[in-house]
Length: 78
Image 1 (cartoon, rainbow, N blue to C red):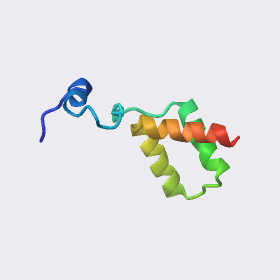
Image 2: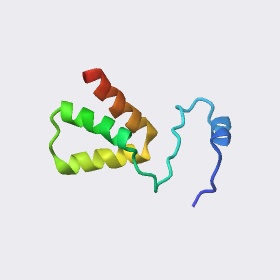
Image 3: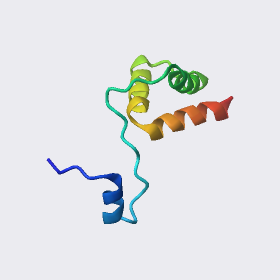
Image 4: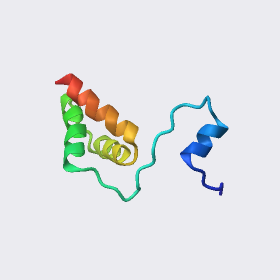
């Protein structure tokens, strides 16, 4: 296992790397508003596959970038 490093250390080692995405606590749950934002997008694109919906919600729970994308995309489709 690799030793852990701070985001600042990684940026110093790799100054040309893409933006670092923060890591969300793995035990964190989506808030009601976050879940509603993701579901708005999924409903607007007529997504009905329960497995895909569950995978999307799980990804949004652990990835701030994914969460922001789906919430923003839902707002833009309104």
